[in-house]
Amino acid sequence: MIISALKSSIASDERSPIHIDTIKTLVELGVEVWFEEDIGDGINVKNQTFVEAGLKKHSREDCLKNGNLIITNQALNNNDLEFVKSNTTILGMVNPFSNQDLINKCSSAKINLVSMEFIPRITRAQKMDVLSSQANLAGYVAVIESAKHLSTALPMMMTAAGTLKPAKVFVIGVGVAGLQAIATAKRLGARVEAFDTRDVVEEQVNSLGAKFVKIDLGETGETDQGYAKELTEEQINKQKELQSKVCERSDIVITTAQLFGRPAPMLIDNSTIDKMMSGSVIFDMAVESGGNVEGSEVDKVVDRNGVKIIGISNLASKVSSHASLALSNNYNNWIIDFFDSETSSINFDFEDEIIQSSVLVYDGKIKNERFQ
Ligand code: NAD
Image 1 (cartoon, protein in one colour):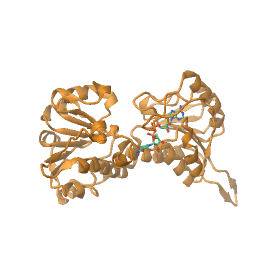
Image 2: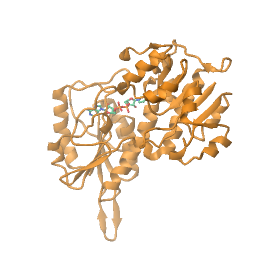
Image 3: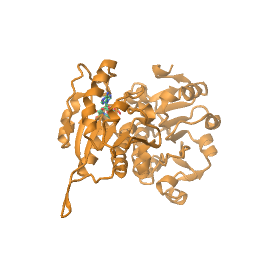
Image 4: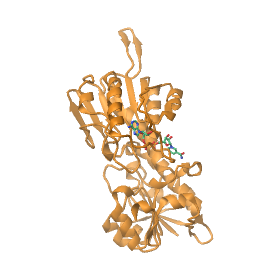
């Protein structure tokens, strides 16, 4: 079997789907591993280093034509797909909700498609969970980037020149990214408050030394996969009204609220922003999926009466080497679990919950009913 690893085709994505510290695992399977030339540019690994580790350097076209398993951090476009032969498996982050066309094309060309975004949230699959591995890093980056835009320091400092108060950080949405944002802001010495519609997270917030903001929205809850349920319009309005007081007193507000497969909820509107202190920062981590903050724009810092509204795409890419390491481990763990060493191929066992959930297209059939 040949495994081909592709370079990112989007300029803002510095991550590589293979990392030098993780390739031994693949090589030990007894497969050939090819990589697209310059794949390590964003993570400071030279082609030669991969070659010395036993990998083969090829053009993108050759990787696409010859790989039996193609690993990628992005959906392939139509030009790429032209080169991929039937029975090949594409595995990676393929953003399926925005790429129905890719799913259809893979089906008609009998290319198997594995979406790592659809790894189920079960204990056995945590090691493959790309959304969590990247969200964790994104939460860290959001705090660091917000701090850069603040004109004060985060920790309290008692100096001869006076006492400097700690910054107040408010995190909205306490999933994987939110928890890491809270932990990072706490480590930097900020005072942190947080809110989530899933009140089960209160204990996690408290255990990080932050304060959970209680807002009673009536019945909220989560899905069997742990994702938040969508709120009614009335509930959203109530949330906006009650959390606006916390925003007013915060130096940094980080919003992470997402709804799986749907646009993110709009949680901070201009009426709240206009009550915030000049110089404060709002970091919209949901900017790529519709945004939690009115006026936020992808890859821009918008200034509204002195309040800076930040939206950055591909946040994990800002710590590309760690992002790449984590992704490579996620992909490797999937491959190892389903690699059949006797036939040197992937065993698509549809009795397995991980295969059922993550394989969107197999043998020409769209397996996930959301995309049929
Ligand atoms: P996510 O990215 O889907 O959303 C981020 C957060 O936004 C969630 O906590 C969600 O509840 C919250 N949110 C949605 N609407 C909101 C609103 N109106 N106001 C405030 N917050 C709102 O979430 P995630 O990071 O995928 O995590 C969801 C849960 O799943 C977490 O508890 C996480 O620990 C858990 N999880 C479990 C596994 C596993 O068991 N394998 C893996 C990953 C995550």
